[in-house]
Image (cartoon, rainbow, N blue to C red; front, side, top):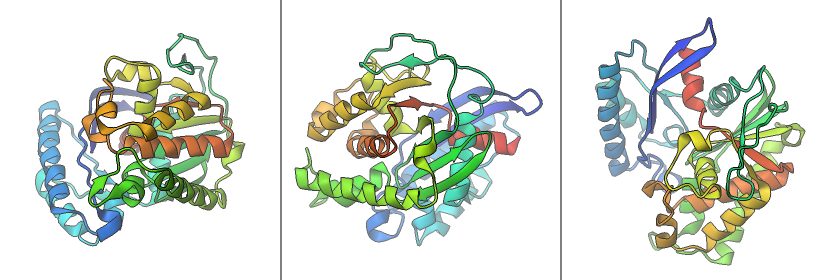
Length: 317
């Protein structure tokens, strides 16, 4: 669960970030198997809500919007989630559709790309070389790899086509990489092949309505993508400024994905930029990213730290 507190000026097109933070709560834990939000997942989420409520109060935010996505759409006990959030934050979580989620992510990721060139770092060989880019070619394909679902949006100044499919790093891990209640470490070739087949089937569904191959710039969002960038750059710690608008080549993503799928929990946990809550699900997330790049032919992914949170802020403004 993530928080952005910002001053937004729709007149000047500026968004001034006051606070941005993330807490991994695994709200989607076991939803794919049980169809319900687990009690411990709800409690982790409400604990994060209480901390966020304090930040919101201290910074004096005048408008609050809470958007809930894949896991809460799927759960039969989502009313428990809604009541808990309302009691803590004073607003109902808006359980948005996949299409709405995609539009918010697209706006957040591309608003600053439109109309001007942006500097970008290249990390195709695993270390940024400071190369400056003249800008980002349109149309964009924005891919938001979440825990339960992945959103695909193609557009230029606005959304042309979008689709959400139930392929996310947590869902794929729990569906394919868990045996006897624990993540297989490392997974077998058969497990990886089954996960890859599931991802490819989802991409087939996406291509029925979204022209993935027409995009000229692939923009990747969310923790799986930003973590791959951090690994590619061999960062000594997670560094948002170094990650934002870095460019990672398909070959580098393939190399990192292969290592993640071969590595043990201890080896992944030893990566200095790895969030502890992502250690068990990052391999699945990286495989989703690699599969998308191979399907679309994208030679690189532009990594964005600006995403659905920024889109939500703009929607409020």
